[in-house]
Image (cartoon, rainbow, N blue to C red; front, top):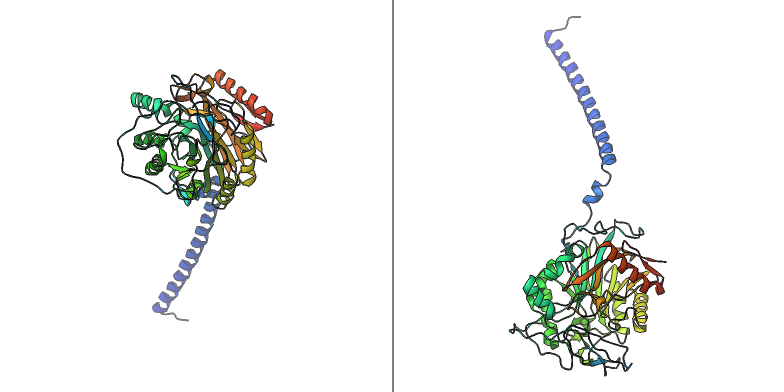
Length: 466
């Protein structure tokens, strides 16, 4: 059969077209196979990369004091250069008994600032991470006891009493405003959230409290180094917050808010004083509450009609606040001012309140006021630190008021916490880590005063229930 050149050309064109389509199909199949193999290889070599990419991140940012009410005993402070006197501590009904004294010299007044008051809101507050690498054993955020995994946890740090006034302010003016924090800086900045008890009002005005041996006051510019040292939150429910009256308390709240430091335990009324502050990190919300079982007189207690601090002589209000805070946060921390000064073990009202607070839903109970370290207890799987002693405070003649440290709690979202204590000694109001021999002495001492609760503090600082 004769085939014209035109037909031959068309047939060749069709054959080339079919070959091209076959080659294209083969190439597409090979490309798909290569992509599948590449995805399998990538997921095998980098299994956690996607999980890490999805992790939520955020910028982080006085004396011998109180006995039990009505016990009829009185104490005198051992602050260097102090003189003996006493003031009254309220009993649960708001009356006073002469068995409380505070802690150091009276600070001088400054220039007045504009009238300032602030609302301590109970809505959640998101704080950022402080960043930095810590040169301490728990810097990686892992649980010291091996029971809390690193993923899905938050690392909380706590210290005892902080005084930004009196002789401490004198030292800061002389040595530099960051001087008191410089020895422990890594331990304060590396945790996700750091908290302590602020033992003085921050104000340049106010009327000094009467019938108190020691009346404190600190300038607003001293809050900047506190924030830069890593502090995210301070408790205000204590026996010095109203040393400059309600005016001083409200100034303190306003200045703390301006400095970006959350606070709890004081307010314009009892609703504000008992409200938690909620901070969030690593997707975990932590509610901090603050109450005091040491109040110089009944008028210091916050009420619906006047400013003051949240009190714990009657525990029912604190218990209700803890239960409510559980609805707003994953973890509930209550910071309590209580106990007897210079006593190395808790008294009955401390153990009773601590257990009531845990029964109500608290995950951690952190104590202050005795100015010396006290023991640890684990109750129903939750930890109690009865007192962390002084952290930054005036110098006294009692050696144990210089023994201090930073307590780390690595906690899960479900409320399980591992504790590690980093022992320190404060010299001239500057706490810093100690040599291994001294560190062992301090951890052995903490074990000796905690053994009644079946708790041991190992040489590496890990705290375990036996």
